[in-house]
Length: 237
Ligand code: SAM
Image (tube, rainbow, N blue to C red; front, side, top):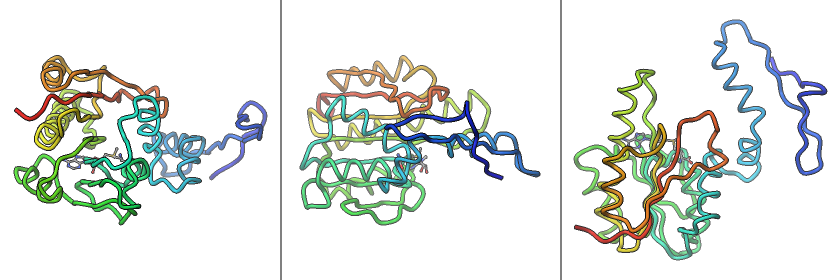
């Protein structure tokens, strides 16, 4: 059941008074899912994403990173890995102008993505052996200026298993980036637990002129997620 909190739960934004939504634990609903739902209902990014027609609150993480580091420019080709439901692809399409015929955005995910203006979609496991060939074909042999990866595997709750899976996904994204990026290109990928591990960072530093870790404000502070931003690709080996 949803009820509007009073007094202490009120929040002020843009001059308007917004009441925080409180949830009573419904019979049969687990405490964790009640907490998740309560957080969603009180999350300004969720509300703003809905208002602007973005498919995910995650869209704002890319907005913030690109506002600060300016790696998306009109006419660019962008490969978005782990793109469903499509929030990052929407931002990339807006910024490169692909809906107006400038640049391209190719969105790849295990899950199907509903059509989006200016976005080409490929339903594909990025870790599969045939992924490089299929993604290369979808790019029509062309190269990308930016490779984004917001890929995340469902957590098992087993720390070391989850860590191995995260690293495997980042490595799969980086393998692809090293195949398709133009010299000078940019790679942005979600990593966890205090950033990319030592080996991955060394590999990134060999392939890119600059490597840094970024935690956008839209990334929940309690989440261990952080993004690695690698710029100035040195060119394919
Ligand atoms: N950036 C997206 C947005 O703004 O809408 C949200 C991405 S969501 C956090 C992570 C995505 O990674 C999921 O849709 C999941 O299916 C995808 N994913 C996980 N493993 C993958 C894999 N091996 N190949 C392709 N996609 C994968």
